[in-house]
Amino acid sequence: MKVQTVIPAAGMGERLGMSRPKALVEINGTTLIRHTLQGLSSFFTELPAIVVFPETFYEEFNRACRDMNVLLVAGGAERQESVRNALTSLEADAEIVILHDAARPFVSPDTVRAGIEACREWGASTLAVPVSDTILMVNEDGFLTDTPDRRQLWACQTPQIFLKELLLSAHVRALSEGKQFTDDASLIRYYGGKVKIVPGHGDNFKITTPEDLNYAAYKMQKECP
Image (cartoon, rainbow, N blue to C red):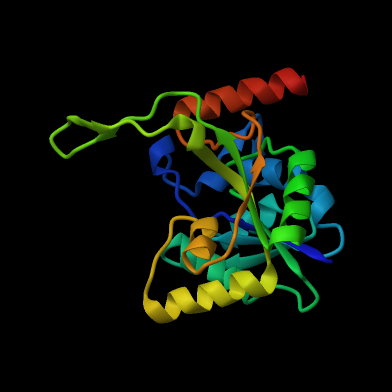
């Protein structure tokens, strides 16, 4: 089954204190999107990776993705619209779609392969890690209301991996019904699909804050001095 990779990268870097897309932020002289693409490069040797970019930043993304097997697709106002735009650009013979955050440059290829195998069996999978902290549910007044059993709680990561036709069908339904979802695994689950949880890794964190960015720079320098 042929696999195609999609990387939504149309988000801006406000929480990083940046005025440009997060994916264009440089870590040790290389853009975040290029770091992430390099980590996933073994999964788009056959079909190009689709990078979804903010429409006014084409030239910058084109430079960042130079010499890589990448197709650039303009994003939308929301992540769900951006993913939907990418899905319309999938190759006809693609059968499995890997969806991965641009801001997770440390994903392990072994976990991606495990996710692909789970997708082949179940139709959909997502990387996730067990929650180690106790999670508190709090009401609008700031008082504790419940403490869920953390044995049933996992923190979602990416990639999330889907059979193409299953994902396309769910997006069409969500568009027709005007429904928005924060991630595609939740979208699939809402419409009755099974999503297999595949154990991820703590290194596969999402760069969101300046502290995350500093740690990523330190980690990259330590691993590739």
